[in-house]
Length: 582
Image (tube, rainbow, N blue to C red; front, side):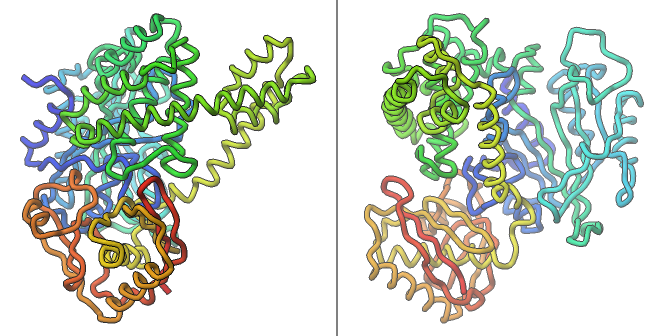
């Protein structure tokens, strides 16, 4: 019998008529709203918006997710930057009764969770949408006592962005404590842990604030693998579950220290290196850098190195590769890219460690410089050592103490908070989109990337392949494999070819095909692993043929005039073009 939670979940929902779809990459394709896929539903946005999915109306998967908004919280017992989300979806098929009943059945009969340890929330209702009486009655019919059903407003209403599909949801909670289970459920009681959420998309919110019913109702559900595994194994610390024990045990061995008393640093190393492994293995080819996904990757690796030093691990050894190998071995049977890119992962970690070790040396020289007059270190200087040289405040304080100097820690915290606020403001645009981010202009840019890709193959060579893209309503950004800076002639020629195709008013046709047939026919594909066996292929005249989830215009004449605004390096062997449609 299968015991892995992912296998149990997929088997259960396949038995209910769902088709398993592959996990999408952690770096989203053509979605400017986020740096990473942050939820299981995110790669399914076009289908939740009404586009037909080649696998039908009932889907299930386990999805790789990365969230970095809680980065500073990593080190506690339950936060993770990378996590796996189990999901099942109804695209205009079944609705509340089936979704809730199956959730309850899986929890109680497959996972054998006692009903008395379960509680739920439902939408209480507001001025626009009534109390979700249907969900309430379904839970009551399944045996959940009235006192274990809490009604809330803010926590039980879901919408991605400010407008678009939305609806109530119903969350399931497990009582994770040895205390006597209280008769009445209080969602604010931390002993109750959320393990599953069923979202019912039945309304659409408009720009004027009004809400209307959707013609087709969808169900989107999610359950976190890490949290649920810890619950099933009776662990109050997620990092004490079987998901983490092989990694934590190795860190104990490398540091010659026990987990107890060193939990924070060991959790950070385990979490950050696992996330780094998945980002480095992703088909998008992300490398550590100072921008976007590369910046997050760099922070994760460097933070794990700092905590390895705190545990007295020899950072000049191959410790990070040893940990990465354990992680790769644990997950590669589920994610092919980990097997294919094993060497890429190990090399990426090693290179960044070497770079950071040099930065640390520079930081030490800078520290000696700012303390040569034996003056105490103010908050601005302490933050400069952190921001520029990666010095954690703890290291600055230790070095200062050796010299008999004081550090303005409160001043540092103030500067750090200002930095966080600036980062949040700068990132705000990255997290606005979601279901509302596929408008008419974005659709045009999406189609233009296909033409750009095809034109580059003619101008630069057939070995050009897409490595990533980012589309907003203002411009497109396209990353592609190329070993040199484009000449002015190459850029001009590329522009001319794209505009020639636009002028020719080429039809954009979509066909469903077997994935192997599509690849054999020469269809371009960026992330082959993310696509199911039946795929949608977009044909633009006879100039472009790509596997893609859409959306696209009906003909190229709709695009207007294409203009390249910038061409630059993205990473080693990858160039980046920014372009606009006029």
